[in-house]
Image 1 (cartoon, helix red, strand yellow):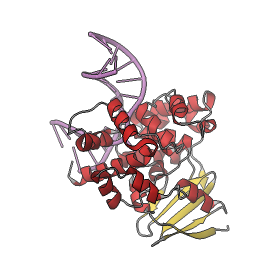
Image 2 (spheres, chains in turn green, red, purple):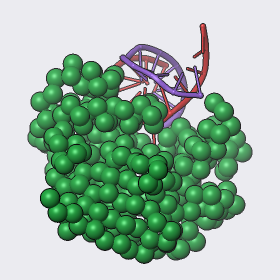
Image 3 (cartoon, helix red, strand yellow):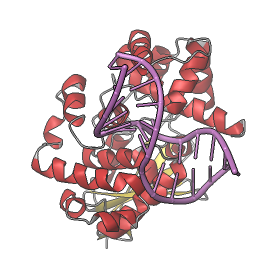
Length: 284
DNA sequence: ACCCAGGCGGGCG
DNA sequence: CGCCCGCATGGG
């Protein structure tokens, strides 16, 4: 079985920060700390990316693997201009300094939908375990990895089998979302329709609310206006921009859009990751 | 024992 | 619109 490899220059690319930032790839892929590499399956192929000094090495089962990595990690984005656009204050600038190379990923819309449904009211370690166990149970093997389950597989799964993946109360949402996505919504047809249209459609999926819809819009469709507000982002923003006062999600959205505009998605990534890393190191 | 986690749906005023 | 609640499960 042939393997395709390639090397490409990559500045401002940090695989570990990206893996640690709780994006769909963090849950679907496998990170190897010793090699500093990440492997995952896509479209019945496998690929592995190794972080070098100022370069990436790629190996995969298809000649398309380099293109896949370029797209998945948005290597075409100029991080220089992203950083200059989002660094509106010292706290964002500090996150950028600490986590330079943290990349936004562009993932499959269907996979993003299920992963972010699993993510609700949950912690990162458990999201990964549940996602992996759903893949083991309902996916199929691609080389030595597992594929992400098809819509049919999850729509036809029993709630009991999903519960045995420890999905908890999310089991019924997973099944409901799969049924809805295969019968009543063309997830892939939404690509490129724009943030408002995409979000409105996603909100019709059972188990998808405001926050999860923004996550899917951002990391499944690449809509950079999206600004998902979870507990970390809320707390971090209240501390940084609202004098520590409790502030409604609606107000935080309004603030974000005025402040970062169509770079909100990248700003959110650095606010979220910075806030979460800082919060964790302080104990709690 | 306790609080919390990349929230959502449903009910209430 | 805002607020409150229940929801499964396991980490710190």
